[in-house]
Image 1 (tube, rainbow, N blue to C red):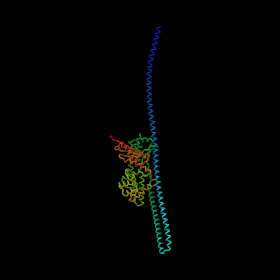
Image 2 (tube, one colour):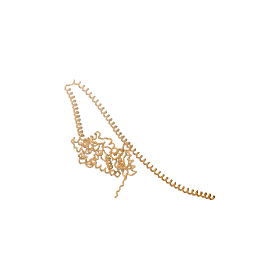
Image 3 (cartoon, helix red, strand yellow):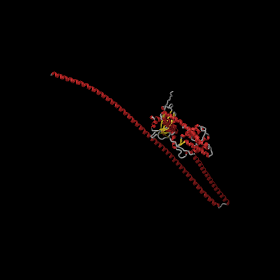
Image 4 (tube, one colour):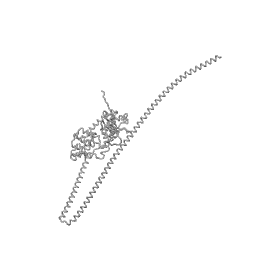
Length: 518
């Protein structure tokens, strides 16, 4: 019995020990497995957290970029609105100045008329007093007649009749003279009207904007290029501002110089047609467009000389004539104006029995000075005279060119004919606009001023004269000197010019190294 109890107790202890052993062993395995599972879950959580963080960063950058584009777009729109408002204010200012000048002129005219009236009133009063005196003297003389002899009375009567006859003769001579003058004026007016009717030339006013159509709005992005490199390259090479706004399937080219604007228009159309738009291709296309425009200028000059039947023009003058196609004078196309003056001069010379070919040649060349190089000083009449004289035009034509604004005395009737024809062509209602001429003159002044510094290669006035871009020669101007040059140009502009708002001076120094692999 005791042995059974002992055996039972021993079995219980053994079973308990075995139970404790197995429980401890299996528990450790579960703990290890749980630890591994926990580590795996933690790693996965870290990876997911990292992915979420990266996605959040990308989303934040994308939102920032979109907000940046939106801000730049809104800023561009506001800038253009400011530019338009500033342009309108400038135009209104010029209109007010012209009105003010007209008022001043009218006041001067009124004062002159008042002064003339006062003079006439004094003369009238003097004559009235003299007439009263004469009547008094005549009455006294008549009273004495009764005491005069027959011969004395006869002599006095003859003197009175002689004085009266002289007065009547003088009045008749003045009347005949006035009638002859009126008939001469009527005849001259009739001649001029006939000449104008026989030379009715249509004119189109030049502007400072050229519009280029594009196949789709997607092309605008390609024209701008990454970070604007394409549009900046195009503007630097042509000196023309490219305006890209919300107008569908259209971009605009703005420049006061019609030749540069035409080169830019031709180059832009070729780039759009070609489809390859990058800085190297832009440079190549712009060079080709420059060559083509030179050819067009030459052909235009030759066509004008053939159209007017003028022979013996040297190629240099023919090229000057071709350049007139891209120039305006007070809003009037210079080539059309010169052709009109040539035809008017020829017709006036025919009416006066003079050589119409000489008059036509002088009329065509009278504004040569307006297409002369910008760095030459002097009036356009004097510059035109120097060009004509340099290339062998005869003295009569040279004098007609220089004298058509009365700067020198004429030596022949042809100078007066050209002056009259120029006045007829320029004084027609709507033929000229002074506002655009003043605007172009201001921009030319800015470019010439900046180009006068040493080391400057090219200068472009863009954005309606609110920015001047100065390209310098890198081998002559260092980076430090470029900064000083920008300051000097800005100071010269402040001292020597008048302008609304502010003008930004940008100096561009670009060094290129080219090698050829063989």
